[in-house]
Amino acid sequence: MKTQAPVKSRFKRFSKRKFCKFCADKSDFIDYKDVQTLRAFLTQRGKILPSRMSGTCAKHQRALANAIQRARNIALLSFTER
Amino acid sequence: MNYYEHIVIVDSSLDEEAISATEKRTVETIEKAGGEIIKVERWGRRRLSYIINKHENGYYIFFVFKTTGATIKQLDNLYKVLDTVFKYMIIKLGKKEILALLNSLQNKKQEGENAVKPEVQINEAAEEEGE
Image (cartoon, rainbow over all chains, first blue to last red):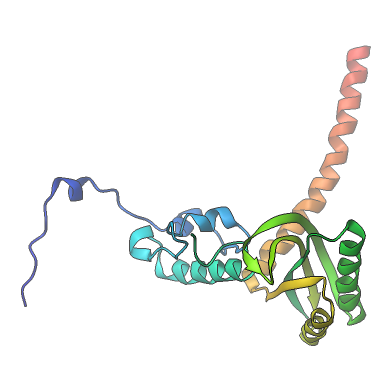
């Protein structure tokens, strides 16, 4: 198997390290009623952002997905935009 | 007994009386079944994120209550008959959510007690200034 040599591009070196927002806040749970925070984890199309893009840890990504689905169920968030 | 959160979306074209009546029906059903209402909040008229049963707007009412599981079935049956409600959701709270809820309730109580005291202090300060 070929191992890829580490890419040393200018952009990669200065890219900010991602972190889980919910771990940093030390929030006990993710509230489905708090639509403003949930909006930050959606794409423009209204899809859930993958954790590799948002930096959310696996535990919180699961909780976040649950919260977003609840908010969608009661029409606080839309299933699709546009 | 479990803790539940409950959101009801009522037809927004109805007047205040009809909305109050719907709220009352829900509260009565829960209390009749031996439950206890902890919180009722009215979020008011909101635009729905997507169209439900040809409704674009809805009046949101939010409940927090404590009952046995059998009550939920009664609520389900109630909303089958009540045509003012076109969407609802009942969620059972987890341990952490219950803790946060109880904490917020306690804080509110303390705030209520504290809120009385500053007024007295202000009055005393005013009197001192007068002297």
